[in-house]
Image 1 (cartoon, rainbow, N blue to C red):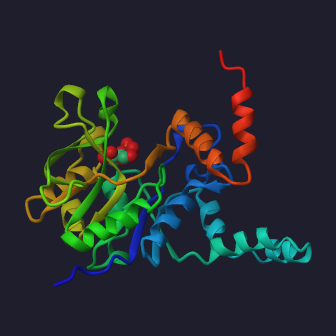
Image 2 (image 1 turned 60 degrees about the vertical axis):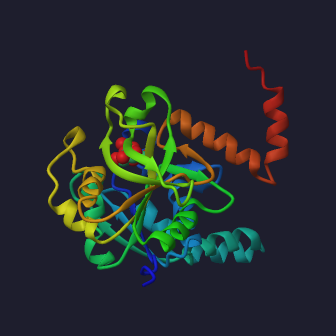
Image 3 (image 1 turned 120 degrees about the vertical axis):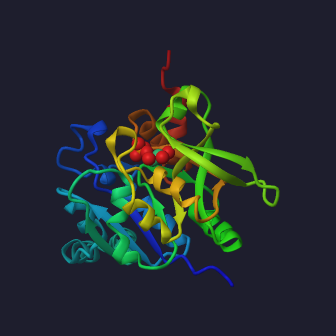
Length: 293
Ligand code: G1P
C-alpha cells in the first residue's frame, strides 16, 4: 500500500531568539530577512514546493508579525497597484496565497518535542513534515521535496542529515546509523543522541532541521521525560519511535545555512545575495574589491 501523502508541515516558531538580541526584541527571529525575504518564508515556500497545502506554525507571544506577513494586506496592495508597481504587488500578493496557514501556540518553552506536540490535533492521523525555520537549505530540488520522494519509497520517518566534523557536532542531534544498501542517500538509523559531547557522538551524521514523521511520534512525545537542557526533545521521541517503526537518515543534496547563528546568518546572506540575478553581479564586484586583511 502506498504511504499516505504528506500534506501538512509544522514550523516550530515559538523561541525567544535570544541569540539575535537586540534585533529580536520586538521582531520574531523567524522574521529576520535573508536579502529581502524572512526566514520563515523560505521554509514555507520549501514545504509548498514539496506538496504541502497546510502549514501549521507553532508560535508564542509577540509573534504577530509572522501572522501579518502571511495575511493579505489590502492597503499596501492598493498603494502598489495605484503606483503601477506590478512586480512588487505580485510578490506581496503571492505570500498571502502560498498555502492555508494555521497558527497554534506553545505557551511554555518546554522544548522542540513539546512544540511539535502542539500540532497534534491539527495534524491528526497522517504523516507530516517538520521544518525548523533557522535551517535554510539552498538546493536545486527543495530539500523537503527530496525527502517526500524518499518517503514515498520507504513509508517511514526520515530525518535530514549532514556530516559535521569536530566539536561542532555537539550542537546537534546525532545519529547512530549505517549506510542503507538500497540507496546511498539513506541511512539506516539504530539510535540517536541529542547534543552529545564529541567523545560520546555515535557518528558524525547530525540531524538538521527537516523531518518527515509518522503520527505515532505524538504518542512518543507524550511519554517523554525532560532530556538535554531539561527540555522535551524531539530527538528522544524519535529514538523511542525506533522501538516501533523504522526511521531513516537522509543525505540531501544542497547547501544548508544555519541562519540561527550570527555567523551562519551572514554567510547565508552573502551566499543567497550572490545568486540573485538582480544583485549578484554588482555585489560580487563589490566583494572582490573589499579590503579584507
Ligand atoms: C534542534 C534539534 C537538534 C537538531 C537541530 C538542527 O536543536 O534539537 O536535534 O540537530 O535542531 O538544527 P536546536 O538547534 O534547536 O538547539
